[in-house]
Image 1 (cartoon, helix red, strand yellow):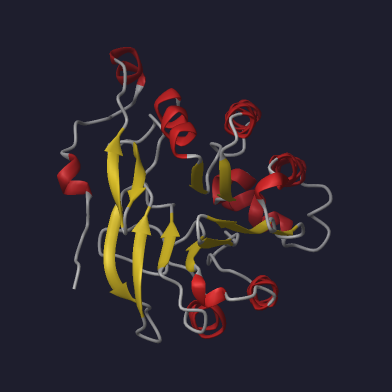
Image 2 (cartoon, rainbow, N blue to C red):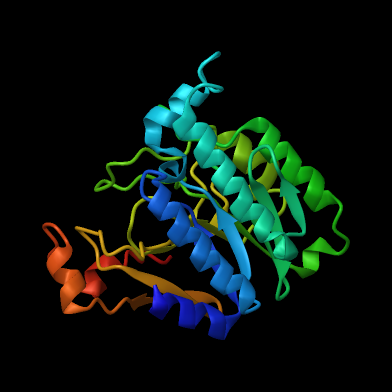
Length: 268
């Protein structure tokens, strides 16, 4: 965490693509809150979205969508309250905030970051009202063509052969209403725990876009070397996190992985 913190403070801008916590456990939220506070206290602008773990995993998220269960499912309601506090504490860096869905728009360094929560149920998705909110907010911006637009969410639009996670649902609506009309330069996501860099196309409208899969910074990673991305110039680069021998001994089934094998780059 300290290595990531130092890099973020030096750069002054950090993008977090979800899963701030592990199954929304209390100690995980406390760690996340402390980390966010350190970033804020050092003037770091934070682009933040949530992941499935932040709502207690798929069971809590699914229960929250069933009539009558949302109010009594303490795991989900407590997690959402904790997350809302994180976002509100970071409000100084948000140019627009959708409180209901915890969506944000951040303008920094000639860039516009649109961070939308992707739902985790049987099929991850971004709802129509979220997309419409983002479109409405972007249409308020003057000279939007002068900005580089980056889309941030937890789930990917694509599914590689080795992926066990499902890709984002309702892709066509997201592409038709938001990604293509506004000319987003990149699609930044987490969830798959590895660094993926592709100059590719959107799955349905075949529009060029750069896919950036963000690696995990957690020492719990079992298949991939934990790390973060430093974005200098037009493309991000992977930086491995140095794990102490003590931490390495605590990881279950971890194996040394050649970081070059983690980087999936099929530029065209």
